[in-house]
Every structure is written in C-alpha cells, then in structure tokens.
Image 1 (spheres, rainbow, N blue to C red):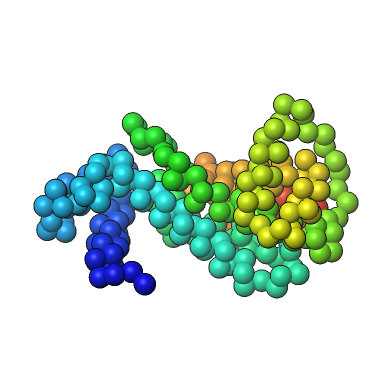
Image 2 (cartoon, rainbow, N blue to C red):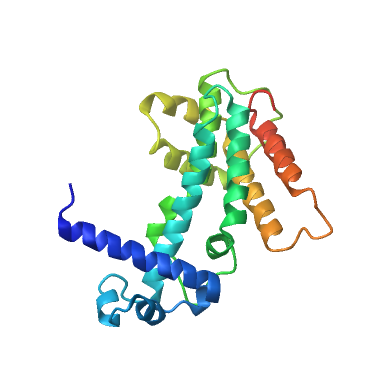
Length: 241
C-alpha cells in the first residue's frame, strides 16, 4: 500500500494533469505552458518542475492519459458483450472509439491530430497507444481458438511486409496467455495485416469525421462506422460478418 508521501504525490500529479487537460482544450497543445498551469494551481513553478521538468513532459503525461482513457473506454464496451459474440465485440470497439473521440475532441486531436511542433513522443507512449489494436487482435485470436475464422479470400502478403507482420505477432504474444499464442501464430499473415488495416480504417474514419473531411461526403456517420466494422470484420474472417 502506498505511503502518505506517494499518495500526496499521485494526487498532485493528477491535479496538475487535469488543469493541463483543460488548458489543452482552451489553448491547444502548442499553447500549453507549465507556468500557466502552476499559476492556476497557485504553486511556484519550481514545485511543479519536480514532477514535470518541461512542457514536453507534461504533454507526454496528457498523451498517455488520453491513450489510457481511450483504451479503457474500448475495453469497457467490449467486455460488456458476450465472449462468444466475436462480431459484437468487434463492433463494440468501433463504436466506443468513435464515442470517446466525439466526447474528448481535444484529447483525440492531441494523439491523432497535427503533431505538436518540436515534440518527439518518448517510448512511454508506445504501450498505451497500442491498446485498441491489441484489443482487436485479441478478438480475432479468440475467434480462431473458438468457432474458427470464416473462410475469407487470401491476399498474399509481400515478403517486404513479412517482418512487420512477425514483429506485430510478437507484440501481441507478449500480452496473451500461453494457451492463446499457438492460435495467434497460426493466423495467416494477411489476417494479421487485416487487423492492422482495420485499426487504420477505424481511426482514419474517426479522424475524418472529427476534422471535417466527411462534410458533404458521409453524413450518416454512425451508420458508416457500423458498416466499416462489418466490412473489416469480414476481411479478417470473424464469424457472422
């Protein structure tokens, strides 16, 4: 159990991040300032710099928090669907990502919008950023273990992409129980790549909607996400798609 000092530190960090999140919505990522956050909190800049030595450290905390919030929303939605309903779980993830983005526009823009000038994301952001992709991969693997994947057209994967497929399988293996890994390794390379393509399509569609690119192109956007979920599910062979 954390001691008093650790609890106080965690509470203070959470308060700093919450104020910074509000500033993000008001001023954008480029306008984020550690000094402005400290002024609102009534703290000396030197006190906050012990936790966030510069703007980039504060940005990283906001980015990780956004990825974690998005991942938690997707997991919560997916976990509420019957485990044997693989297509339903897949649809739940697509819906949850879009719903979270619509209600957390500034945070979504921070992680999927225009890069912040001068900011280079550290390794700390890689794990949190992968949560939705891993969730989709887990659904496909569960389907492969259970009822089996439906027959779907095989599209040869170029040899130049094979190393990427192998690396992504290794990423997912590290997150799964040993009894699941054999089924994951047995997936066709084009199915693994299909999960990555589904992730790309999902976030591409949500980004197009949030950033105005679907204006006078796709107006029935909720229906479009449902359609996209089904077509990508069919591509990876989820039963019932």
